[in-house]
Length: 90
Image (tube, rainbow, N blue to C red; front, side, top):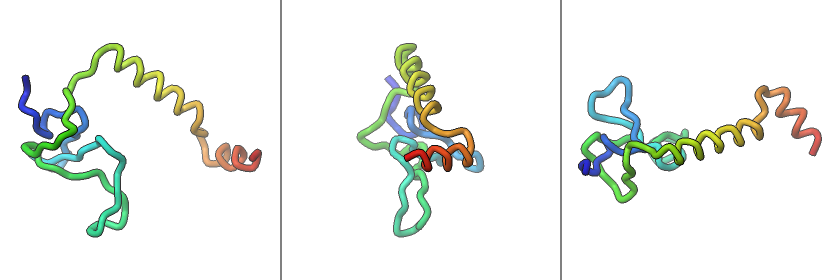
């Protein structure tokens, strides 16, 4: 079993400009006292938390994710103009 650290967690994405830092994508970005704009939580590769998840996914999970993305794409207008038109309908 892998060591349960950020560096090998499903939710962690290494920063392009760093060798041992990354962003936790487990929860939506959030604003903080330090940053007024919402940001992903930055962690070190060796950090850990109670929400670590295996880095790989099963074929079933992959299909569920694809289905979810397809459903969201149907709901989200592909242009700002379509968004405005959709809002006017309601």
